[in-house]
Image (cartoon, rainbow, N blue to C red; front, side, top):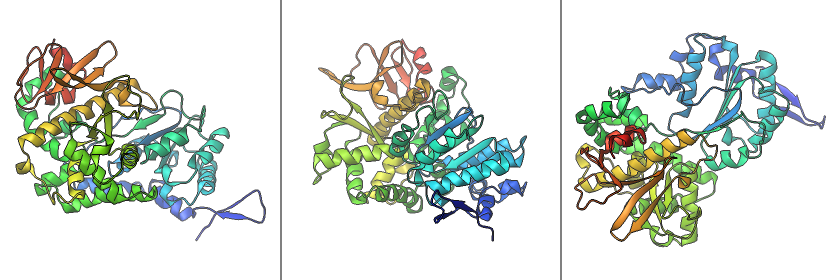
Length: 455
């Protein structure tokens, strides 16, 4: 057994580092060209009917970047797929992977990266779940100041947006130039449709495939953009306790780290599910929980990529004490909320009713807008409330007013019948296409370009 010892400034104190055996075990390609057949994340894909590879999701650039998103959404698998691609034409030692959840503290993180840099000089460094290391940014700062990341593609992943955002702010000038913080969302409807074999290069292609897209939309309303849920629905015909328990543990585990109550979070999520698509106040969201606590839990769940919300007016300040419209970030999380509140044990296509589909349609439109605007604006600290809000008018509510850049577009989700039409609004319908109507599935695939099909 080989151990590596680092000496602190105090010569009487020694810091043991990761064993070299453990480092090599995390980088099996250094010794084994067939490592991919034994990697647990890549082996899992062999069991799936639907496998997605997000090549190019994050641009490769010199310096350090952070990629963060919810747990169980496929970040580690995405890294392993990227590593496998890099090794097709690169030397094994040019790629280094580290599961930061195996790191004791920032000192061990610093010394391990320094050691590997000296031994192998890798061109690509991947540090997975970096937010698991307390004060990780201090180690990254020191390594950056020493030039360790110069000329290298370095990716740090995390599951807590508040951890990543706040700590990355302490690294001014030490990350990659331009955008260096990227959100890793569940698959979009367009990506899901591609997995089901429907390719559309533009909105007109999507319209031509509308008869195929709408049945898939019903499936998307269940599994959302979570590949594991998609494959479970395919293999078992329903989403059940075994699947929901995995994602429920993710939420409860993150709450435990913040010393927050899973029961209170479940009450808040249940309130969001009940009020979905309706304007709500903090005080009305969860019975028996004061509005201050509700506000804190909403923000915590927002940082965990469970939910998000829009303000009533574009000039409303973030967190202002006015009503909100709160959405889950993915359809699958809606069903997870019902599971956690013991309202369902499983869910299948036959359980979808028109009222629920109407709510999920609006929620899916919100997610598509948010993810599209994030990718378009390329901001480090993206907030959808800079670009979208909802409004109440004398004749009713406008679900989304979205500033795409040149002008604001009014969008109304109408998955059922449209009782009364108003000028200046684009209606997102189930299957109607007209001068002011656009099929939802087409919009979800092309959240901005598809608007050219209507006036």
